[in-house]
Length: 110
Length: 116
Image 1 (cartoon, rainbow over the protein chains, first blue to last red):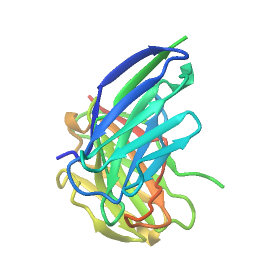
Image 2 (image 1 turned 120 degrees about the horizontal axis):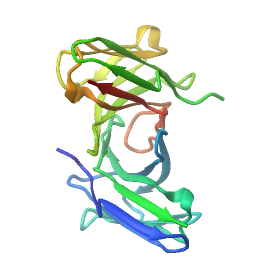
Image 3 (image 1 turned 60 degrees about the horizontal axis):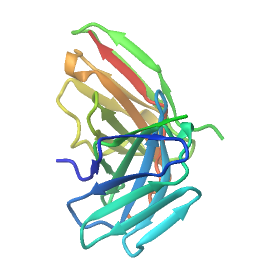
């Protein structure tokens, strides 16, 4: 069974707008990570948030974590066409195995 | 420093044929992972090597899949015989450290496998 589930499944916005996507997970975690996959390319690690953190920023990215609700959100501010990609949240087990959600497909139009 | 590389980038084969995917991890990374994304679905774990040993192969779908990592360097994933449902993108990742406290896995570009 998948650990992380993202919503929405797809998101279409215009450049300059913000994009928000959510992720829910099922088990206790030590950290949660977000990845991006551009079409035809590999996964790129975006940000890691630890279970004792509530919010983290990296450039135009803002991640929140609510362990009581077992959920996380990723906000991309001032989106650009280059942000068009699939975004995945993932949790890890003790050996580092990543468990991904189905992902959110984000399309940013100029 | 070179990242994780995978070969081929794309493979188109017919049902029943054999395909071998290769992954070269970042030099010095003991941990190597294989994942797969079937069309439109989530990315699923296949297996994890620590050096040349299989630490976890719980995600391997069936015995048509065979993974090896001879000498603890590059890894191969063989599908024999391939079925239609094997189509998807196969990702390889490596990391220096395993464990839940910190784990950044560096992913390769993936191999897109199409089984006709």
